[in-house]
Image (cartoon, rainbow, N blue to C red; front, side, top):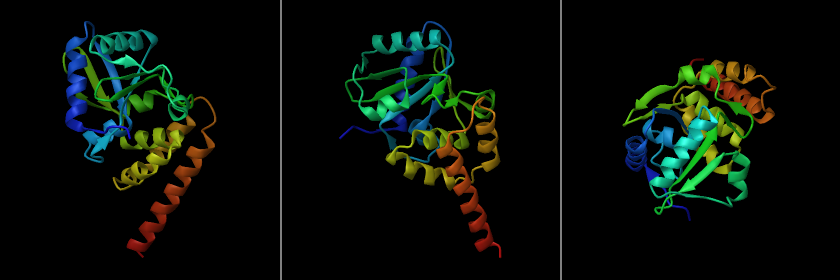
Length: 200
């Protein structure tokens, strides 16, 4: 079974990266790591980061190698589907998945996603922005993994702004993934139904 890591461990690793960087770098934290910092999840298996360019990816990879991470040469099928450009793992079993501007070839780091993100950490030369709960939900929806379902329910409890997700799906420059449209439609239906029950 893969090891799991809490927010303190994730923070420590991000701080190590920031202190090791020679040049400024901004990353966007998605997935379980972002949820852990928001108090929505206790532990996660991976630290999922989106960068804005190939140069940023190369810079981050170089620093991780200096810090003792190794490149995962043969990830399992689940990881291959996510489309991470690089997967690196340290001796503790913590994996850092690096995405270059998009996830699974479906969701792009759009201007809307950037604007909704909030600054969380800035150790050394590293800036870590947390993507919004709505956008974490979107990323998990297109990932389609069994483990993401529980996270999606946790995110629903935060009072997601459904319109935000629907608008961004429609502005990605390509048809929204059918699975994502269906999930958001179900969420909208569930929220409306819950509202009716609570406020007849």
